Structures are given as C-alpha cells and as structure tokens.
Length: 199
Image 1 (cartoon, rainbow, N blue to C red):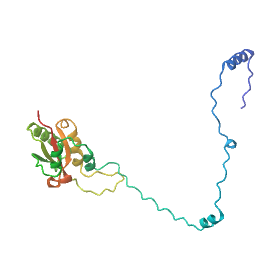
Image 2: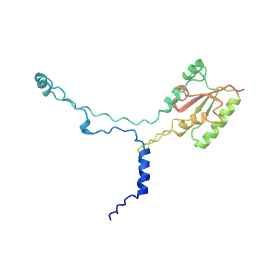
Image 3: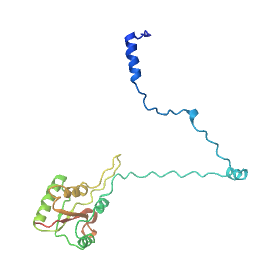
Image 4: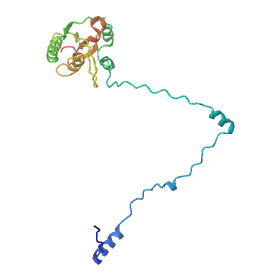
C-alpha cells in the first residue's frame, strides 16, 4: 500500500515558515569520507643489496604462550602475611620465630563449623578476660580430596573460616594480631592469636 501524499494547507505552510526562521543549525560534526583521507606515500624501498639480504631471511615462529593458571585469590598464608603488623615489633619477631610460648590453646579438629565457631568465641573471650595475650588456635590443614570439578574447592573449611571469625564481632575488638603459627606450634595448621590487653 502506498501512502497518499498530503500537501500542507496555507496555514500549515505559514507556521512552518515561522519555525524555519527561528531554527538554528546544530554544531556541525565533520563527516569522514574515504576520498577526504590524506594520501599516504608508499614506504621507501630499501636498496637492492638490502632487499637481497632480507629476501633470504626466514622468520622463526614465535613459541606459543603458555597458558597462565587462574589464581583468583592469594593463598591464606600470603593474605595474612600482607596485613601490617599491629603488635610490638620485638614480640612479633619472637612470635613468628616460634620463641613465644602460647598461654593457652584450643584444638578445633573434628568439629563442625557451627561447633567450632561457638567453641572459638567462648575460648577467645575467656582468654581475654583472664588477661592472656598469646593463644594458639589449631584448625588443621584440611583433608586432601581430588579436585576434578570445574570450580576449584578450597582445602580446609576451618582453616579458611577461623581468620574471618576472629575479625568479626564479638572477637574483632579483642584480637590484635592473627598469624600463621611457626612449625613448632603446628605451622599452616594453626594460628597465633595475639589478644589486646584486658581493661
């Protein structure tokens, strides 16, 4: 179906004429046309002697880039090591070398996450109230299982959750420092927790 062309009435033409007189053109945007592109000169050819040398060259194929492993997050040990030290530097050095003996310890092996969370809260709050400064929290490294799925699984739920619990309420205000324990006290399967002074 073709539309029937409609001519403007004399009144419409008069109104349109007023609109045209008051209209201002928009800022013009330059339009790129291929014929307006600057002419580029051809690259100068090397002399015949150099061309002969270049023609005999064989380019070696570049070795294929080795695919990088997807490391989405730093390991827990690295993340704890990056946190600035809050406690006395000398005490920190002694603690990190395993020369400070913990005042108390708790072993969370074999507990569910819910049981471990409750036990940890009670232990840390009691230790702080008793005026203890350095306590050892043993989590274990976690069971090693085959990771054959597309989504990587972290090893050791307690090992990863305990530092978070120690930073959250009600423990956050009483904990000054959290570090991985020295090999003498369990290494990667335990944490030193340095508590603030009880007031």
